[in-house]
Length: 264
Image (cartoon, rainbow, N blue to C red; front, side):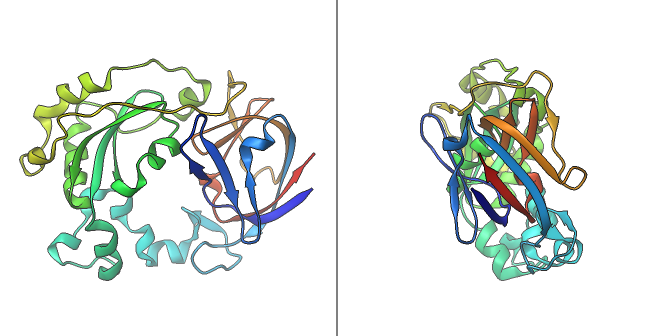
């Protein structure tokens, strides 16, 4: 059976284990049900997630022109400390920026390959942690806008990592950490503007991923270089499909690519 559609990040359902869904325009697949099956992935063409044109994808599922024009790809997306909507100051589209930036945001600690600090909208908890492949996470600050979350992250990343080692995460080369102790350790480094938003009492969230076999030496599939691949699916973690031959495929990094997916 073959399905065709443009790749967007897998939708997830918080369960034990996490349930993953690949959603196309006219179909969707519960990827958990494909574990143990042989899957073929064939690159067909590009389809920018903004304009829909068959133009090479530049970043985040967008072609180069769209990436530099639309508010969904502005610098404050990756660097929340650059947010300016709270000042009524436009970057690319003030209405969009107010909608996204002026809502509750969480600064969190997540352990995927190591303990890292991150920022997400409150509405994206625990989705953000799942997408990063974190097996445990905890909220440490809840603020009313993206800017405050951003400056808090900038301050804390002087004392804790802000990046995930994807290879270590996929190898499951991880250690459990006491995130409550980490939260207390970092409390004094929170900026004055955000100190009142510190979360004094909460517990860790633990996440179980559907993986039968972790790769010892994960090798990333790049459809632009290798447009056709077939392998046996053995697990899903973060936004990665894990195959028996140690190939891993990052769905999020391939957004905007139209593919044929064949299941046998």
